[in-house]
Length: 417
Image (cartoon, rainbow, N blue to C red; front, side, top):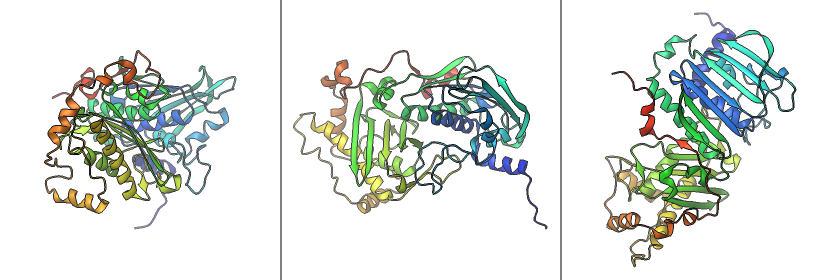
């Protein structure tokens, strides 16, 4: 069989299949672009779980008229200044988002560059430009409208989940991006129903306090070694979930889902919560750029670490120290019993984990468990007053915030039986 060179349209659709897996992928790419553009407010609207319509509006820097068409060319980007791919400081850097979305949808982009006197608009259908760049009405920033996702690749539509599941995937994406980008306001609406609203905050702690259960149950985590810095907050073991959606992990400001980090978190908690429960954590790792590779996955949700063992130890140790400090502060005369063995090597930790044939995070029997849970369940008078709740000296979170949890997504139309 002869070898042929694929045409540009087919190449773009194949590439889009790697970057755009589902409507949530579109939301992720467009919101990341809005964040990179220096926005302070981002509004997302969806219909039918994102199949029919996705719009993202921001008040960022905008795009110059002469760059609008260039923005839809593959591998065109303004965010990569280092050709060696070492110091990647933006969420997006490959220049694949807009051309990939345009290849499988009908998209319209309107933008007004900061300082420009006029806004301009451009449209694409199935990867083909429709008409010319035309002036439009827009006060600031960028407005992107994506309709009829996968209309040119209908087979992909067969693999999408229910409207409720696709909407929940979008909620999870926005939640992750909003946690670490706490200085930006986010709004997510499905039809005429508001699913999420985050107001602008000054600190990660304040953003987390927008979730009611976090405010009176938070513990601060700090750990540092060999230039790697771990900061963030965790909840007491009394606050747990049946899924991992409340485990937020970030690397250099980038939301990621990494089994290594989740494993370290769960191992640190596995004396305190059942093996089928997950803690509420928000942890940020600052790692030297030359020790982490973010260019390993098409949608940039995974990264590769140079020193996995050290990272595992930093996260595990940081959480255990935080929990042990909480116990020691209880003053109930059991400090000696509440001593954690933090001297174990990674090999010993791995050996203990492998002993459990039923699951990596099976709950271990512990003589301390009753003491520990009794301590956590006991009322903490020091946290009863509002000033003590905000013990880090931050300003209070702003009011009027609505954050709907997974259990509250019954606002979304339930899937048909």
